[in-house]
Length: 228
Image (cartoon, rainbow, N blue to C red):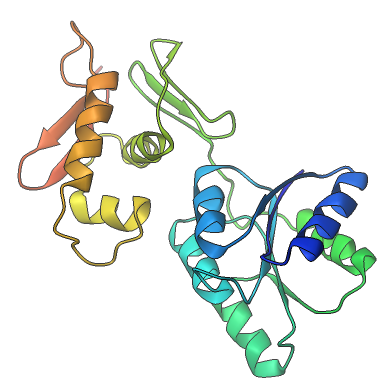
């Protein structure tokens, strides 16, 4: 079980990580909200422990961004603000449980185990294939004709979204929201630049355009024909 711990207090962060590792968990840590968002959306975790008061991106905004990126891992929010309105705000943001500081470590473990026993609302699909292209989100691997391609985290996230919508156009706006978490047009060429690099790695001679540019609309991974 992999747990992401997003906590800015070094002593608390190391105490939680050390304790969970002794319980058999694998842990990864982040010291602020921005780093936590990057890890949460680009790696797979079975659960997360998120402090409410974080620098750079507060816990409430962080959890909302994680859920907006369609990351469904259970989240336990930690906070010294344990009044009912604060708890409601955290749960409405997308947290699954709420633990007030100070807390007993055994209770945190019990809550993580309880969340781990919950069946997912929907089966989580981790493998997508379109012709010779295949992405395995659990293994964090993208292959073309069985060959693993070396992609940057941003390129991997881009191809993940395209593969999940294989045969359909993914708009520039969708990519800005789901990859860079922009809910406005930043008026930069960040999408075009990264897509150009991705296409140069994925497209190959003899196979045509595996990632197609649909001028004026967006991009599309070419889906194989299913004609009988």
